Amino acid sequence: MNIIVLVKQVPDTTEMKIDPIHGTLIRAGVPSIINPDDMAGIEAALSLKDRYGGTITAVSMGPLQAERMLREILGRGVDQAVLLSDAKFAGADTWATSTTLAAWLKTQTFDLIIAGRQAIDGDTAQVGPQVAEKLGIPQVSYVESIEACDGTWLRLSKAYEEDSELLEVKLPALITTLSTMNRDRGMNAVDAWAAYDKPLTLVRFSDLDLPESDVGLKGSPTQVRKIFTRSLEAASLKTDLSPEDAARLITDVLIKTMEA
Amino acid sequence: METKDILVFIEQRDNVIQSVSYELLSEARKLVKQIKHVKFEVVGILLGSNLGQLPHDVLNHGADRVYVADHPELAHYSTLRYTHVISELVKQHKPDAFLIGASVIGRDLAPRIAARLDTGLTADATKIEINPNEENTSELWITRPAFGGNLFGTIVCPNHRPQMATIRPQVLDADFFQANRPGIILNLPYKPMEDSVRILKRTKKHNTGPDITHANILVSGGRGMLNCFDLLDEVAVLTGGVVAASRGVVDKGAAPKDIQVGQTGKTVRPRLYLACGISGAVQHTAGMDKSETIIAINSDPQAPIFGVATIGIVGDARAILPLVIENLKAYKQKHS
Image 1 (cartoon, rainbow over the protein chains, first blue to last red):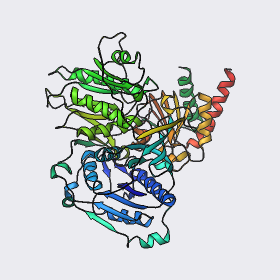
Image 2: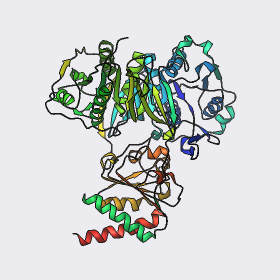
Image 3: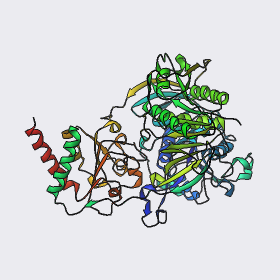
Image 4: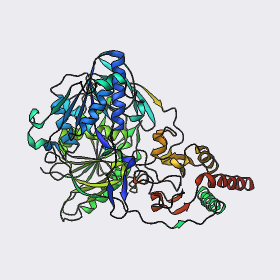
Protein backbone atom coordinates (compact mmCIF):
# COMPACT_ATOMS: atom_id res chain seq x y z
CA MET A 1 0.00 0.00 0.00
CA ASN A 2 1.37 3.38 -1.06
CA ILE A 3 0.49 5.97 1.55
CA ILE A 4 1.11 9.71 1.55
CA VAL A 5 0.75 11.54 4.85
CA LEU A 6 0.23 15.30 4.87
CA VAL A 7 1.80 16.97 7.89
CA LYS A 8 2.23 20.47 9.24
CA GLN A 9 4.61 21.98 11.76
CA VAL A 10 2.66 24.20 14.16
CA PRO A 11 3.32 26.29 17.27
CA ASP A 12 2.06 24.55 20.40
CA THR A 13 -0.99 26.74 20.94
CA THR A 14 -1.65 25.41 24.43
CA GLU A 15 1.64 27.10 25.43
CA MET A 16 0.74 30.40 23.83
CA LYS A 17 0.08 33.45 25.99
CA ILE A 18 -1.12 36.96 25.36
CA ASP A 19 0.86 40.00 26.35
CA PRO A 20 -1.70 41.63 28.67
CA ILE A 21 -0.38 45.14 28.07
CA HIS A 22 -0.04 45.16 24.30
CA GLY A 23 -2.72 42.58 23.56
CA THR A 24 -0.36 40.74 21.25
CA LEU A 25 0.49 37.08 20.91
CA ILE A 26 3.75 36.05 22.59
CA ARG A 27 5.35 33.59 20.18
CA ALA A 28 8.85 33.66 21.58
CA GLY A 29 9.68 30.45 23.38
CA VAL A 30 6.60 28.66 22.06
CA PRO A 31 7.79 25.24 20.89
CA SER A 32 7.04 23.94 17.38
CA ILE A 33 5.38 20.54 17.29
CA ILE A 34 3.96 18.09 14.77
CA ASN A 35 0.29 18.99 14.47
CA PRO A 36 -1.58 16.53 16.76
CA ASP A 37 -4.19 15.39 14.20
CA ASP A 38 -1.31 14.80 11.71
CA MET A 39 0.57 12.76 14.30
CA ALA A 40 -2.45 10.43 14.42
CA GLY A 41 -2.24 10.23 10.61
CA ILE A 42 1.41 9.17 10.81
CA GLU A 43 0.58 6.46 13.34
CA ALA A 44 -2.39 5.30 11.23
CA ALA A 45 -0.09 5.03 8.19
CA LEU A 46 2.50 3.08 10.18
CA SER A 47 -0.09 0.58 11.42
CA LEU A 48 -1.46 0.14 7.89
CA LYS A 49 2.09 -0.52 6.71
CA ASP A 50 2.57 -3.04 9.55
CA ARG A 51 -0.47 -4.95 8.30
CA TYR A 52 -0.32 -4.58 4.54
CA GLY A 53 3.25 -3.49 3.72
CA GLY A 54 4.09 -0.67 1.32
CA THR A 55 5.78 2.69 1.61
CA ILE A 56 4.92 5.87 3.48
CA THR A 57 5.81 9.33 2.25
CA ALA A 58 5.39 12.34 4.53
CA VAL A 59 4.65 15.60 2.70
CA SER A 60 4.69 19.05 4.19
CA MET A 61 4.41 22.57 2.85
CA GLY A 62 6.09 25.27 4.88
CA PRO A 63 9.32 27.11 5.60
CA LEU A 64 12.67 25.33 5.37
CA GLN A 65 12.77 24.87 9.14
CA ALA A 66 10.03 22.22 8.76
CA GLU A 67 12.84 19.92 7.61
CA ARG A 68 13.56 19.24 11.28
CA MET A 69 10.02 18.00 11.82
CA LEU A 70 10.26 15.79 8.72
CA ARG A 71 13.52 14.27 10.00
CA GLU A 72 11.75 13.46 13.23
CA ILE A 73 8.92 11.83 11.27
CA LEU A 74 11.47 9.76 9.31
CA GLY A 75 12.82 8.74 12.69
CA ARG A 76 9.38 7.42 13.54
CA GLY A 77 9.47 4.91 10.68
CA VAL A 78 8.20 6.86 7.66
CA ASP A 79 10.20 5.91 4.53
CA GLN A 80 10.70 9.22 2.78
CA ALA A 81 9.76 12.87 3.10
CA VAL A 82 9.04 15.77 0.77
CA LEU A 83 9.05 19.45 1.71
CA LEU A 84 7.31 21.94 -0.55
CA SER A 85 9.01 25.18 0.30
CA ASP A 86 9.36 28.42 -1.60
CA ALA A 87 9.05 32.10 -0.75
CA LYS A 88 6.32 32.20 -3.40
CA PHE A 89 4.16 29.82 -1.31
CA ALA A 90 4.11 32.15 1.68
CA GLY A 91 0.79 33.51 2.90
CA ALA A 92 -1.30 30.84 1.17
CA ASP A 93 -4.87 30.31 2.34
CA THR A 94 -6.44 26.84 2.18
CA TRP A 95 -7.34 27.16 -1.51
CA ALA A 96 -3.78 28.09 -2.52
CA THR A 97 -2.29 25.51 -0.13
CA SER A 98 -4.42 22.67 -1.47
CA THR A 99 -3.77 23.79 -5.06
CA THR A 100 -0.02 23.69 -4.43
CA LEU A 101 -0.10 20.33 -2.64
CA ALA A 102 -2.38 18.85 -5.31
CA ALA A 103 -0.05 20.03 -8.09
CA TRP A 104 2.71 17.90 -6.59
CA LEU A 105 0.45 14.99 -5.60
CA LYS A 106 -0.83 14.73 -9.19
CA THR A 107 2.66 13.64 -10.22
CA GLN A 108 2.66 10.76 -7.69
CA THR A 109 1.01 7.37 -7.49
CA PHE A 110 -0.69 6.48 -4.23
CA ASP A 111 -3.47 4.36 -2.77
CA LEU A 112 -4.26 6.54 0.19
CA ILE A 113 -3.60 10.08 1.38
CA ILE A 114 -3.91 10.72 5.10
CA ALA A 115 -4.16 14.26 6.45
CA GLY A 116 -4.84 15.45 9.96
CA ARG A 117 -8.40 16.70 10.39
CA GLN A 118 -7.21 20.23 11.22
CA ALA A 119 -4.10 22.12 12.30
CA ILE A 120 -4.12 23.70 15.74
CA ASP A 121 -2.83 27.06 14.46
CA GLY A 122 -5.44 27.66 11.79
CA ASP A 123 -8.16 25.19 12.85
CA THR A 124 -9.76 25.26 9.39
CA ALA A 125 -10.05 21.53 8.56
CA GLN A 126 -10.20 22.59 4.91
CA VAL A 127 -6.93 21.53 3.28
CA GLY A 128 -7.67 17.78 3.36
CA PRO A 129 -11.06 17.95 1.61
CA GLN A 130 -9.77 20.60 -0.82
CA VAL A 131 -6.80 18.43 -1.83
CA ALA A 132 -9.23 15.52 -2.38
CA GLU A 133 -11.40 17.71 -4.61
CA LYS A 134 -8.42 18.99 -6.62
CA LEU A 135 -7.31 15.37 -7.16
CA GLY A 136 -10.84 14.19 -7.94
CA ILE A 137 -10.76 11.43 -5.31
CA PRO A 138 -13.27 10.61 -2.56
CA GLN A 139 -12.71 11.77 1.01
CA VAL A 140 -13.70 10.72 4.50
CA SER A 141 -13.02 13.33 7.17
CA TYR A 142 -13.11 12.98 10.98
CA VAL A 143 -11.83 9.39 10.89
CA GLU A 144 -11.73 7.91 14.40
CA SER A 145 -10.49 4.41 13.54
CA ILE A 146 -9.33 2.31 10.59
CA GLU A 147 -10.68 -1.24 10.52
CA ALA A 148 -9.34 -3.05 7.47
CA CYS A 149 -8.42 -2.81 3.81
CA ASP A 150 -9.02 -5.37 1.06
CA GLY A 151 -6.90 -3.53 -1.50
CA THR A 152 -9.87 -1.79 -3.15
CA TRP A 153 -11.99 -0.61 -0.22
CA LEU A 154 -10.81 0.82 3.07
CA ARG A 155 -13.13 0.25 6.01
CA LEU A 156 -13.13 2.90 8.69
CA SER A 157 -15.19 4.68 11.27
CA LYS A 158 -16.09 8.36 11.02
CA ALA A 159 -17.01 10.45 14.05
CA TYR A 160 -20.07 12.70 13.98
CA GLU A 161 -21.14 14.95 16.85
CA GLU A 162 -23.31 12.29 18.39
CA ASP A 163 -22.80 9.10 16.49
CA SER A 164 -20.31 7.12 14.48
CA GLU A 165 -20.57 5.75 11.00
CA LEU A 166 -18.86 2.60 9.78
CA LEU A 167 -17.95 3.28 6.16
CA GLU A 168 -16.08 1.88 3.22
CA VAL A 169 -14.28 4.19 0.83
CA LYS A 170 -12.92 3.17 -2.54
CA LEU A 171 -9.19 3.70 -3.04
CA PRO A 172 -7.46 5.88 -4.01
CA ALA A 173 -8.97 8.18 -1.42
CA LEU A 174 -8.12 10.84 1.12
CA ILE A 175 -8.98 10.58 4.79
CA THR A 176 -8.52 13.05 7.64
CA THR A 177 -7.67 11.74 11.09
CA LEU A 178 -8.56 12.80 14.63
CA SER A 179 -5.76 13.08 17.20
CA THR A 180 -7.74 10.84 19.55
CA MET A 181 -7.78 7.84 17.17
CA ASN A 182 -4.50 6.31 18.34
CA ARG A 183 -1.41 6.80 20.43
CA ASP A 184 1.89 7.33 18.62
CA ARG A 185 4.51 4.66 19.05
CA GLY A 186 7.39 7.10 19.48
CA MET A 187 10.77 6.65 17.91
CA ASN A 188 12.71 3.43 17.84
CA ALA A 189 16.49 3.35 17.81
CA VAL A 190 16.81 1.81 14.34
CA ASP A 191 14.60 4.36 12.58
CA ALA A 192 15.95 7.28 14.60
CA TRP A 193 19.43 6.26 13.54
CA ALA A 194 18.35 5.98 9.90
CA ALA A 195 16.46 9.29 9.84
CA TYR A 196 19.34 11.19 8.28
CA ASP A 197 19.97 8.53 5.61
CA LYS A 198 16.39 8.45 4.36
CA PRO A 199 15.49 10.60 1.34
CA LEU A 200 14.14 14.07 2.04
CA THR A 201 13.30 15.97 -1.16
CA LEU A 202 12.85 19.68 -1.44
CA VAL A 203 10.24 20.81 -3.99
CA ARG A 204 10.32 24.41 -5.21
CA PHE A 205 7.71 26.45 -7.06
CA SER A 206 9.63 25.93 -10.33
CA ASP A 207 9.25 22.15 -9.92
CA LEU A 208 5.47 22.43 -10.08
CA ASP A 209 3.25 22.90 -13.11
CA LEU A 210 1.40 25.88 -11.69
CA PRO A 211 0.95 29.53 -12.61
CA GLU A 212 2.34 31.96 -10.06
CA SER A 213 -1.13 33.46 -9.74
CA ASP A 214 -2.31 30.24 -8.04
CA VAL A 215 0.13 30.14 -5.14
CA GLY A 216 0.88 32.00 -1.95
CA LEU A 217 -0.80 35.17 -0.80
CA LYS A 218 -1.47 36.33 -4.37
CA GLY A 219 -3.20 33.08 -5.23
CA SER A 220 -5.44 33.15 -2.17
CA PRO A 221 -9.12 34.05 -2.62
CA THR A 222 -9.39 34.98 1.06
CA GLN A 223 -7.42 37.75 2.70
CA VAL A 224 -6.93 38.71 6.30
CA ARG A 225 -8.37 42.18 6.84
CA LYS A 226 -7.39 42.56 10.49
CA ILE A 227 -6.03 40.52 13.38
CA PHE A 228 -6.74 41.14 17.01
CA THR A 229 -6.64 39.51 20.41
CA ARG A 230 -9.61 39.67 22.66
CA SER A 231 -9.18 42.16 25.45
CA LEU A 232 -10.24 40.72 28.74
CA GLU A 233 -11.85 43.14 31.13
CA ALA A 234 -10.86 42.90 34.74
CA ALA A 235 -13.51 41.10 36.75
CA SER A 236 -14.74 42.04 40.15
CA LEU A 237 -12.74 39.57 42.15
CA LYS A 238 -13.58 38.16 45.52
CA THR A 239 -10.22 37.50 47.06
CA ASP A 240 -11.06 37.52 50.73
CA LEU A 241 -13.83 34.93 50.96
CA SER A 242 -13.44 32.01 53.33
CA PRO A 243 -14.13 28.62 51.66
CA GLU A 244 -17.41 28.52 53.64
CA ASP A 245 -18.55 31.92 52.35
CA ALA A 246 -17.47 31.05 48.83
CA ALA A 247 -19.41 27.77 49.02
CA ARG A 248 -22.51 29.61 50.31
CA LEU A 249 -22.33 32.12 47.46
CA ILE A 250 -21.93 29.39 44.84
CA THR A 251 -24.71 27.27 46.36
CA ASP A 252 -27.11 30.23 46.24
CA VAL A 253 -26.47 30.83 42.54
CA LEU A 254 -26.75 27.11 41.77
CA ILE A 255 -30.08 26.84 43.56
CA LYS A 256 -31.43 29.98 41.91
CA THR A 257 -30.47 28.63 38.49
CA MET A 258 -31.96 25.19 39.24
CA GLU A 259 -35.25 26.66 40.29
CA ALA A 260 -35.61 29.38 37.69
CA MET B 1 -19.85 38.37 -12.44
CA GLU B 2 -23.37 39.41 -11.48
CA THR B 3 -24.21 37.76 -8.17
CA LYS B 4 -27.18 38.05 -5.86
CA ASP B 5 -28.63 36.74 -2.61
CA ILE B 6 -27.31 34.86 0.40
CA LEU B 7 -27.50 31.09 0.14
CA VAL B 8 -27.78 28.99 3.30
CA PHE B 9 -27.13 25.24 3.42
CA ILE B 10 -29.98 23.62 5.35
CA GLU B 11 -28.59 20.60 7.12
CA GLN B 12 -31.00 17.79 7.97
CA ARG B 13 -30.18 14.60 9.76
CA ASP B 14 -32.87 11.91 9.82
CA ASN B 15 -35.16 14.62 8.44
CA VAL B 16 -34.58 16.92 11.40
CA ILE B 17 -33.28 20.34 10.39
CA GLN B 18 -30.24 21.15 12.53
CA SER B 19 -30.54 24.25 14.69
CA VAL B 20 -27.38 25.79 13.19
CA SER B 21 -29.26 26.09 9.89
CA TYR B 22 -31.97 28.16 11.59
CA GLU B 23 -29.27 30.29 13.22
CA LEU B 24 -27.82 30.98 9.77
CA LEU B 25 -31.22 31.83 8.26
CA SER B 26 -31.81 34.40 11.03
CA GLU B 27 -28.33 35.84 10.48
CA ALA B 28 -28.82 35.99 6.71
CA ARG B 29 -32.09 37.93 7.26
CA LYS B 30 -30.17 40.51 9.31
CA LEU B 31 -27.44 40.74 6.67
CA VAL B 32 -29.75 41.26 3.68
CA LYS B 33 -31.45 44.05 5.60
CA GLN B 34 -28.10 45.81 5.99
CA ILE B 35 -27.29 45.53 2.28
CA LYS B 36 -29.18 48.58 1.11
CA HIS B 37 -28.09 49.25 -2.47
CA VAL B 38 -29.46 45.99 -3.86
CA LYS B 39 -32.30 43.73 -2.84
CA PHE B 40 -30.94 40.36 -1.78
CA GLU B 41 -33.05 37.35 -0.90
CA VAL B 42 -32.28 34.69 1.66
CA VAL B 43 -32.16 31.38 -0.21
CA GLY B 44 -32.04 27.91 1.34
CA ILE B 45 -30.77 24.70 -0.22
CA LEU B 46 -32.16 21.51 1.30
CA LEU B 47 -31.21 17.97 0.29
CA GLY B 48 -32.77 14.76 1.54
CA SER B 49 -35.48 12.20 0.95
CA ASN B 50 -39.22 12.37 1.74
CA LEU B 51 -38.73 15.86 3.07
CA GLY B 52 -42.45 16.55 3.47
CA GLN B 53 -43.09 19.82 5.29
CA LEU B 54 -39.41 20.67 5.84
CA PRO B 55 -39.16 23.20 2.95
CA HIS B 56 -41.96 25.21 4.63
CA ASP B 57 -40.03 25.17 7.91
CA VAL B 58 -37.12 26.71 6.00
CA LEU B 59 -39.37 29.52 4.73
CA ASN B 60 -40.88 30.07 8.18
CA HIS B 61 -37.41 30.45 9.65
CA GLY B 62 -36.39 33.19 7.25
CA ALA B 63 -35.79 31.98 3.69
CA ASP B 64 -37.53 33.77 0.82
CA ARG B 65 -36.86 30.85 -1.46
CA VAL B 66 -35.75 27.29 -0.96
CA TYR B 67 -34.24 24.89 -3.47
CA VAL B 68 -35.06 21.28 -2.71
CA ALA B 69 -33.44 18.09 -3.99
CA ASP B 70 -35.53 15.16 -2.76
CA HIS B 71 -34.25 11.69 -3.66
CA PRO B 72 -33.55 8.43 -1.75
CA GLU B 73 -29.83 8.73 -2.63
CA LEU B 74 -29.74 12.06 -0.79
CA ALA B 75 -31.37 10.81 2.43
CA HIS B 76 -28.01 10.63 4.19
CA TYR B 77 -25.12 12.99 3.72
CA SER B 78 -22.76 11.98 0.91
CA THR B 79 -19.75 14.19 0.19
CA LEU B 80 -19.76 13.55 -3.55
CA ARG B 81 -23.51 13.74 -4.18
CA TYR B 82 -24.11 16.79 -2.00
CA THR B 83 -21.07 18.58 -3.47
CA HIS B 84 -22.34 17.88 -6.98
CA VAL B 85 -25.94 19.02 -6.44
CA ILE B 86 -25.01 22.15 -4.49
CA SER B 87 -22.15 23.21 -6.79
CA GLU B 88 -24.48 22.97 -9.81
CA LEU B 89 -27.09 25.08 -7.99
CA VAL B 90 -24.47 27.69 -7.07
CA LYS B 91 -23.29 27.93 -10.69
CA GLN B 92 -26.86 28.43 -11.83
CA HIS B 93 -28.17 30.78 -9.09
CA LYS B 94 -24.88 32.70 -8.56
CA PRO B 95 -25.30 33.65 -4.89
CA ASP B 96 -23.15 36.47 -3.54
CA ALA B 97 -22.56 34.67 -0.25
CA PHE B 98 -22.99 31.10 0.93
CA LEU B 99 -23.24 30.18 4.62
CA ILE B 100 -22.86 26.66 6.00
CA GLY B 101 -22.96 25.41 9.59
CA ALA B 102 -19.56 24.37 10.94
CA SER B 103 -20.81 20.91 11.89
CA VAL B 104 -18.99 17.70 10.97
CA ILE B 105 -21.06 17.61 7.77
CA GLY B 106 -20.60 21.31 7.02
CA ARG B 107 -16.86 21.17 7.52
CA ASP B 108 -16.66 18.17 5.17
CA LEU B 109 -18.90 19.69 2.52
CA ALA B 110 -17.94 23.38 2.43
CA PRO B 111 -14.23 23.00 1.57
CA ARG B 112 -15.06 20.50 -1.16
CA ILE B 113 -17.56 22.93 -2.75
CA ALA B 114 -15.20 25.92 -2.37
CA ALA B 115 -12.42 23.96 -4.10
CA ARG B 116 -14.76 22.94 -6.92
CA LEU B 117 -15.99 26.51 -7.43
CA ASP B 118 -12.51 28.01 -6.91
CA THR B 119 -13.70 30.51 -4.35
CA GLY B 120 -12.66 31.54 -0.85
CA LEU B 121 -13.94 29.85 2.30
CA THR B 122 -13.56 31.05 5.87
CA ALA B 123 -13.70 28.29 8.46
CA ASP B 124 -15.56 28.09 11.73
CA ALA B 125 -16.52 31.75 11.94
CA THR B 126 -18.03 33.30 15.05
CA LYS B 127 -19.15 36.65 13.62
CA ILE B 128 -20.33 37.99 10.26
CA GLU B 129 -20.85 41.62 9.34
CA ILE B 130 -21.09 43.74 6.21
CA ASN B 131 -17.93 45.77 5.50
CA PRO B 132 -18.54 48.72 7.84
CA ASN B 133 -16.18 51.06 5.97
CA GLU B 134 -18.01 51.21 2.66
CA GLU B 135 -21.39 52.17 1.34
CA ASN B 136 -23.14 50.07 -1.28
CA THR B 137 -21.27 46.92 -0.57
CA SER B 138 -22.19 43.32 0.10
CA GLU B 139 -18.67 42.38 1.14
CA LEU B 140 -18.73 40.19 4.22
CA TRP B 141 -16.25 40.63 7.06
CA ILE B 142 -16.01 37.25 8.65
CA THR B 143 -14.33 36.91 12.02
CA ARG B 144 -12.94 33.67 13.33
CA PRO B 145 -10.63 32.51 16.09
CA ALA B 146 -7.20 31.06 15.21
CA PHE B 147 -4.17 29.80 17.10
CA GLY B 148 -6.39 27.83 19.41
CA GLY B 149 -8.54 30.89 20.06
CA ASN B 150 -5.62 33.06 21.15
CA LEU B 151 -6.10 35.30 18.16
CA PHE B 152 -8.98 36.51 16.03
CA GLY B 153 -8.83 37.27 12.34
CA THR B 154 -11.31 39.11 10.16
CA ILE B 155 -11.30 37.52 6.73
CA VAL B 156 -12.59 38.90 3.43
CA CYS B 157 -12.98 37.39 -0.02
CA PRO B 158 -12.70 40.41 -2.34
CA ASN B 159 -12.52 38.96 -5.84
CA HIS B 160 -14.30 35.62 -5.78
CA ARG B 161 -17.94 34.69 -5.41
CA PRO B 162 -19.74 33.32 -3.59
CA GLN B 163 -18.08 34.46 -0.37
CA MET B 164 -18.24 31.25 1.62
CA ALA B 165 -18.06 30.63 5.35
CA THR B 166 -18.76 27.88 7.82
CA ILE B 167 -20.18 29.26 11.08
CA ARG B 168 -19.94 27.69 14.51
CA PRO B 169 -23.18 26.30 15.88
CA GLN B 170 -24.72 28.17 18.82
CA VAL B 171 -22.89 31.48 18.45
CA LEU B 172 -25.67 33.20 16.48
CA ASP B 173 -29.28 33.52 17.55
CA ALA B 174 -32.07 31.71 15.72
CA ASP B 175 -34.55 34.46 16.48
CA PHE B 176 -36.53 34.71 13.26
CA PHE B 177 -39.76 32.79 12.95
CA GLN B 178 -43.01 33.55 11.21
CA ALA B 179 -45.68 30.89 10.85
CA ASN B 180 -47.03 30.24 7.33
CA ARG B 181 -44.54 32.63 5.84
CA PRO B 182 -44.96 32.76 2.07
CA GLY B 183 -42.04 31.96 -0.20
CA ILE B 184 -40.92 30.02 -3.22
CA ILE B 185 -40.14 26.29 -3.16
CA LEU B 186 -38.24 25.02 -6.20
CA ASN B 187 -37.45 21.39 -6.86
CA LEU B 188 -34.06 20.55 -8.30
CA PRO B 189 -33.68 17.61 -10.65
CA TYR B 190 -31.42 14.82 -9.39
CA LYS B 191 -29.83 12.10 -11.50
CA PRO B 192 -28.64 9.07 -9.50
CA MET B 193 -24.86 8.89 -9.24
CA GLU B 194 -22.35 6.33 -8.06
CA ASP B 195 -20.77 7.03 -4.67
CA SER B 196 -17.26 5.88 -3.72
CA VAL B 197 -18.24 5.83 -0.07
CA ARG B 198 -20.74 3.32 1.30
CA ILE B 199 -22.27 3.49 4.75
CA LEU B 200 -22.34 0.12 6.49
CA LYS B 201 -23.65 1.03 9.92
CA ARG B 202 -24.50 3.98 12.12
CA THR B 203 -24.09 3.72 15.88
CA LYS B 204 -24.77 6.11 18.72
CA LYS B 205 -21.51 6.88 20.47
CA HIS B 206 -21.23 4.57 23.45
CA ASN B 207 -19.60 7.09 25.77
CA THR B 208 -22.10 9.83 25.03
CA GLY B 209 -23.33 11.17 28.33
CA PRO B 210 -25.61 14.15 28.56
CA ASP B 211 -24.90 16.71 25.86
CA ILE B 212 -22.93 19.67 27.23
CA THR B 213 -24.31 21.98 24.54
CA HIS B 214 -27.86 21.64 25.88
CA ALA B 215 -27.24 21.74 29.64
CA ASN B 216 -28.67 24.47 31.87
CA ILE B 217 -25.84 24.17 34.37
CA LEU B 218 -22.31 23.17 33.40
CA VAL B 219 -19.86 22.17 36.10
CA SER B 220 -16.54 22.46 34.34
CA GLY B 221 -13.07 21.45 35.44
CA GLY B 222 -9.58 22.38 34.29
CA ARG B 223 -6.09 21.21 35.07
CA GLY B 224 -6.52 22.42 38.65
CA MET B 225 -9.15 19.71 39.10
CA LEU B 226 -7.22 16.73 37.73
CA ASN B 227 -8.04 13.64 39.83
CA CYS B 228 -10.92 15.51 41.50
CA PHE B 229 -13.57 15.18 38.82
CA ASP B 230 -15.73 13.17 41.23
CA LEU B 231 -16.45 16.47 43.03
CA LEU B 232 -17.69 17.97 39.76
CA ASP B 233 -19.79 14.86 39.11
CA GLU B 234 -21.44 15.19 42.48
CA VAL B 235 -22.28 18.87 42.02
CA ALA B 236 -23.68 18.05 38.58
CA VAL B 237 -25.85 15.22 39.89
CA LEU B 238 -27.22 17.37 42.73
CA THR B 239 -28.09 20.28 40.44
CA GLY B 240 -29.22 18.42 37.34
CA GLY B 241 -26.19 19.82 35.59
CA VAL B 242 -23.60 18.26 33.33
CA VAL B 243 -19.83 17.97 33.73
CA ALA B 244 -17.56 19.64 31.18
CA ALA B 245 -13.80 19.94 30.88
CA SER B 246 -11.05 22.11 29.46
CA ARG B 247 -8.66 21.04 26.73
CA GLY B 248 -5.82 20.52 29.21
CA VAL B 249 -7.82 17.84 30.99
CA VAL B 250 -8.96 16.13 27.79
CA ASP B 251 -5.42 16.17 26.35
CA LYS B 252 -4.23 14.38 29.49
CA GLY B 253 -6.85 11.70 28.85
CA ALA B 254 -8.67 12.53 32.10
CA ALA B 255 -11.97 13.40 30.40
CA PRO B 256 -13.62 12.37 27.11
CA LYS B 257 -13.32 14.68 24.10
CA ASP B 258 -17.09 15.14 23.78
CA ILE B 259 -17.28 17.14 27.02
CA GLN B 260 -14.47 19.52 26.01
CA VAL B 261 -15.39 23.21 25.92
CA GLY B 262 -13.49 25.69 23.78
CA GLN B 263 -12.22 26.47 20.36
CA THR B 264 -11.17 22.90 19.64
CA GLY B 265 -14.10 21.51 21.63
CA LYS B 266 -17.69 22.64 21.83
CA THR B 267 -19.27 26.06 22.17
CA VAL B 268 -21.68 26.22 25.10
CA ARG B 269 -24.20 28.76 26.38
CA PRO B 270 -25.60 27.38 29.64
CA ARG B 271 -27.53 29.51 32.12
CA LEU B 272 -24.71 28.90 34.61
CA TYR B 273 -21.11 27.96 33.90
CA LEU B 274 -19.14 26.99 36.99
CA ALA B 275 -15.45 27.04 36.03
CA CYS B 276 -13.31 25.18 38.55
CA GLY B 277 -9.54 25.26 38.33
CA ILE B 278 -9.66 26.51 34.74
CA SER B 279 -7.05 29.14 33.94
CA GLY B 280 -9.11 30.38 31.00
CA ALA B 281 -6.88 30.59 27.93
CA VAL B 282 -8.80 32.30 25.14
CA GLN B 283 -8.98 28.88 23.49
CA HIS B 284 -11.31 27.94 26.37
CA THR B 285 -13.20 31.19 26.94
CA ALA B 286 -14.06 31.47 23.22
CA GLY B 287 -16.27 28.42 23.81
CA MET B 288 -18.12 29.57 26.92
CA ASP B 289 -18.05 33.34 27.29
CA LYS B 290 -21.64 33.66 26.07
CA SER B 291 -22.90 31.74 29.11
CA GLU B 292 -25.54 33.71 31.01
CA THR B 293 -23.71 33.59 34.35
CA ILE B 294 -20.11 32.50 34.86
CA ILE B 295 -18.67 31.67 38.25
CA ALA B 296 -14.93 31.08 38.22
CA ILE B 297 -12.92 29.55 41.04
CA ASN B 298 -9.16 29.69 40.68
CA SER B 299 -6.31 30.01 43.13
CA ASP B 300 -4.38 32.33 40.81
CA PRO B 301 -5.80 35.89 41.00
CA GLN B 302 -4.14 36.60 37.61
CA ALA B 303 -5.97 33.74 35.85
CA PRO B 304 -7.55 35.07 32.65
CA ILE B 305 -10.79 33.18 33.40
CA PHE B 306 -11.64 36.04 35.78
CA GLY B 307 -11.77 38.33 32.76
CA VAL B 308 -14.99 36.68 31.56
CA ALA B 309 -16.45 35.71 34.92
CA THR B 310 -19.59 37.25 36.40
CA ILE B 311 -18.36 36.20 39.82
CA GLY B 312 -14.68 35.46 40.36
CA ILE B 313 -13.57 33.62 43.47
CA VAL B 314 -9.90 33.38 44.31
CA GLY B 315 -9.55 30.09 46.13
CA ASP B 316 -9.07 26.34 45.84
CA ALA B 317 -12.05 24.66 44.17
CA ARG B 318 -10.97 21.35 45.70
CA ALA B 319 -11.64 22.83 49.14
CA ILE B 320 -14.76 24.81 48.21
CA LEU B 321 -16.69 22.19 46.22
CA PRO B 322 -17.05 19.67 49.09
CA LEU B 323 -18.73 22.46 51.08
CA VAL B 324 -21.00 23.29 48.13
CA ILE B 325 -21.96 19.60 47.97
CA GLU B 326 -22.76 19.62 51.71
CA ASN B 327 -24.90 22.76 51.29
CA LEU B 328 -26.75 21.28 48.31
CA LYS B 329 -27.46 18.05 50.17
CA ALA B 330 -28.77 19.95 53.17
CA TYR B 331 -30.97 22.04 50.88
CA LYS B 332 -32.32 18.96 49.12
CA GLN B 333 -33.14 17.30 52.42
CA LYS B 334 -35.01 20.35 53.62
CA HIS B 335 -37.02 20.60 50.40
CA SER B 336 -37.82 16.95 49.74
